[in-house]
Structures are given as C-alpha cells and as structure tokens.
Length: 127
Image (cartoon, rainbow, N blue to C red; front, side):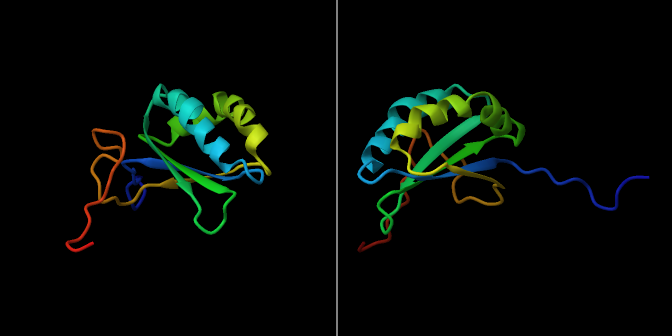
C-alpha cells in the first residue's frame, strides 16, 4: 500500500552558518571566507552558490548562506570538509559557529549565483 501523500522533493537545499567574530576580526573573517572558503566550496559536488552577510547592527556577526542541489551534498561537506574549514576560521571566531539547514522553497532567481557569481536585484525607478 502506498502512502497517502507522495514524498515531496525540493529543488535546492540551503546551509546557513552564523559566525560571531572576535572584536575587530570581522574583516579578517570575511577575507578568509573569500580567499579560502570559496575555493573549497566551488569544488564540492552539488555546490551552487555562497552568499555572505555582515550584520549592520552587530559588528561581529557574519552569516553565510550556501545553496546546494541536494540535502546529501552539504551533509557530506559538513562531515568530510567542514571540520578543516572551521580550523582555518577559528582564529577569527569568538564562539562556535551555529549551522542550520533549510529546504529552499521559493526564490526570485532561477540560478542563485547568476552567470557572474553575484545576483544584484534591479533597483526600482528613482532609487
């Protein structure tokens, strides 16, 4: 007998990491993410894009959002690669990073990264 509802599949998966840098180390953390982490992520199977957010009200907070084709791919990255990545970042961190995962339900972009690596939303007229 089949289940009453079909199993739902999601087109993409997101991994969010919340970092708190040591005071005065936010720029170093961002530079390390750009120079070291991006290169590692680009070669991971299923990796689509990474967005880095720096808080405008909490100067030591940085949040990264990475997008993946399936749930299994970032899980593999988390087990096999992330421990070494975290070691590279630890000198800039005040606390242990918090990792959360989400199914991507909707997006206004077809390809999160676009063709040039960054999606820049169109500005409304007069902006």
